[in-house]
Image 1 (cartoon, helix red, strand yellow):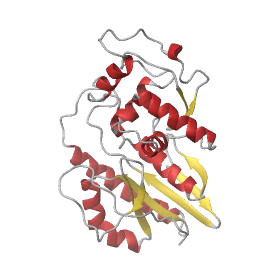
Image 2 (spheres, one colour):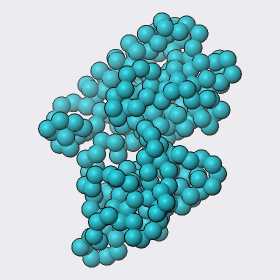
Image 3 (cartoon, helix red, strand yellow):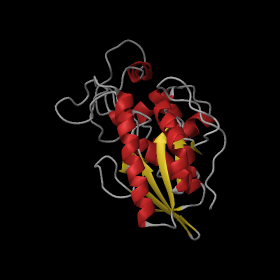
Length: 278
């Protein structure tokens, strides 16, 4: 089967289990559980590009299988899976449409929202994780429009949770006249600025509510792990937690004992999850 069929099967399974709307990370995890061998980047490009209703057509052949109903949240459309749901002609390359789609999906992605480490995708993984842990979601900020305020607020029993979410800098410009063009400056330097901003926001959230659990959430990159290791003592003194989200959408607390990996690249997650009330 092609990547589209894998994702449709995953979306139908989630919908049948009452887990709709779903995030790209939800779909990718479900597709993996069903045996999909496609790369996460390929699956995510299909979700936000080929298969999303109303997506700008940078990809050629496009289907309208998923409808975006919120920040990083999707549902199946009425015409999902139909061969006539394409809005553009068949590609002219030899071979079946899915083969052509898979080839292009492995090329560099110019839509920053297709990157797993985009802030909106990291936020969706955090929300899915909290929902699975029986937290009631009170607020989810619209990251695409840069909505101000706390990124994620949740409540479980008497515990309030406030989460500041950061993504990893995109390798391409997301807005302005250079949108889609590769960036020339150092991404790790920009990531350090993101971390500093999250640190300040976390302290402000702590000052605003001394009783809430305050969390800083980042995609799992070495730059962020290095910075977390260097600041974990003062963060712990302020009762501020750090969570990491990996490419598959798994959320784990920072384990200072694991130590950062070398190189500026995603690193594998440490083991299990922690979201119990303090």
